[in-house]
Amino acid sequence: MSTLFTNIKELIQVREHGKDLLRGKQMDELPSIKNAFLWIEDGLIKDYGSMDEFHPHPAEEVYDCTGKIITPGYVDSHTHLVFAGTREKEFEDRIHGLTYEEIAVRGGGILNSAAALGKMTEDELFEQARLRLDEVVAQGTTAIEIKSGYGLSVESELKILRVVSRLRESGTTTHHIIPIKRTFLGAHAFPEKYKNDREGYIKLIIHEMLPKIGEEKLADYIDVFCETNYFTVDEMLRIIEAGSAYGLKAKVHVNQFTSLGAIDAAVKAGAVSVDHLEVMESTDFMALSKAKTIATALPSCSFFLGLDYAPVNEMIDRDIAVSLASDYNPGSTPSGNLNFVFSLACIKMKMTPQRAFNALTVNAAHALEMQDELGSITKGKRANLLIFKNIESIAAVPYNFGQVVIDQVVIDGVFI
Ligand SMILES: N=CN[C@@H](CCC(=O)O)C(=O)O
Ligand SMILES: [Zn+2]
Image 1 (tube, rainbow, N blue to C red):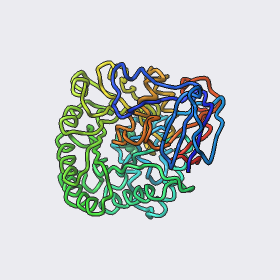
Image 2 (spheres, rainbow, N blue to C red; image 1 turned 135 degrees about the vertical axis):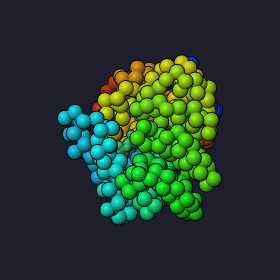
Image 3 (tube, rainbow, N blue to C red; image 1 turned 90 degrees about the vertical axis):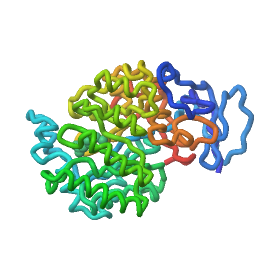
Image 4 (cartoon, helix red, strand yellow; image 1 turned 120 degrees about the horizontal axis):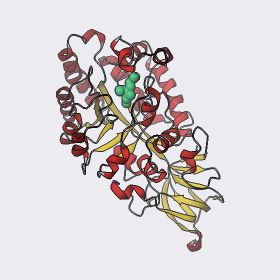
């Protein structure tokens, strides 16, 4: 099956190699071809170039893209998309003055979501999560990471990871399969039962959950919420070390409310990414500068909870590799819309559209170790693409916040 797109107004994020992590000044470059063509065969990008050099390619389908911009699809490297029910009550409590942390200390928050999830069957969870997947794919997400973490028991953590694995195999309700990476986040919070027995819960994670996850091959990464009132830096290190015995690399929640030294520890432990980063001290910047570990900012979470935004421009200026993700979850970010993340990155974090788009594509693909397959218009990469409505430039995407500017989403060369 081959498809040809002709007369593309601008083909954006075109990179001959497309596999390098971007940092510093590289984040300011967003290579593109105006008046371009793009040729797809068997779901892969085969050729592209200027219409001036166009020579006919055999194609079953030809689309005239006059007036349209085409880009690679967004990659969402941090979500908690499998959850049971929403948390509007806490949302109202926060409007009345309670903080996210105060709600959590009262037994709300993550524990509230875990209680709801415990009551739901695997099939129910799967159906709900699948509808969310449909929605975010229609909004331009063409690869995604999904965490467990609302189970907090052996049975429920496995249930979530089985749901994620099923989503990975069966895709959207219309059977479009997008790449999904699965992350085990048993260390998301201490369940009520283990409130006074932290060691008992950590042992449960290491000696009960991990071996079963390893046996069933249910995860690709391991995560820990390292934060005051959650897991300490030492506990995080123990858990990610235990995960590495099952081949799970680390992607961790750090510096959301406090800087505890978790970034330095995670970088030294070889974490693929450190995520959140709303609170950054100079030692945190130093630990990440030039490191392979990617700094993933989650601006929708800052927006929803009224937190500071991660200082991404300062990070970029210090040669830190920055990516952006949604953090889709029922507590701190009830939206998986990366167009909105794009807008917030520009409006609130003062990223240029070029920097933000690089963070949502090339560097986000690195945050899922999928840079060989996704993130840019590069020969041999998967044809996961966004076709935008008649807009003038990439800046029109974040500018039109809250509006639908994507015309079509293409997965493996097929329109969804
Ligand atoms: N901070 C930890 N975990 C989630 C939120 C969890 C929740 O409130 O349900 C996050 O990334 O924001
Ligand atoms: Zn998260």
